[in-house]
Amino acid sequence: MIFDSSTLRPLLATYNNGGNLYDSLQWGPDASTLYAIDNELDFDFFALKVNASGVVLDQLYAGLFTGFRARIHFDPGTKLLYGDYGEAVDPVTALPEGNFFATGRMVPDSKLNRAYLIMGTSIPSTFIIKAFDLAHFNLVDSIKIDNINGYPHRLIRWGTNELAFTTNQESQVYLGGGNIVH
Image (cartoon, rainbow, N blue to C red):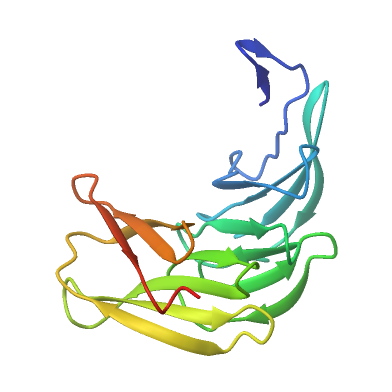
């Protein structure tokens, strides 16, 4: 649904596969394109069109993104969608462009030609942030972070060389930066 203030636009993007499972939403290259995935049942990818009348389902691609509770992330520089399970997909053609072969909350940054993923280790409360080359999908750096309460919920880039993430425990925010973000 699209609202203008409190007024609902008449067209609604519905899809009936047992429910309307637009679990992770991401704006595309402009305000007329919205992307979504189902991260609970079928792992479908949806391309939606937004206009003055509302939002409608434009394309459905079955099983394109995998993983429960995964999110998608659009990068305007590469014009690709990235998933928390390492996928990189062209949202126009729905063709895979590469894979980081890593799983975790992620954020792409084409200005730095990097993708950052934070993932757990076998040691409780210890996580690793891995930096990948966006063009070649190879690992270029990593850093271990100890004494984290909970599990990372969101990862963002901020400033010139900083990352921040929240956890699912007591709304904690962790800020960090340095050589891994360059």
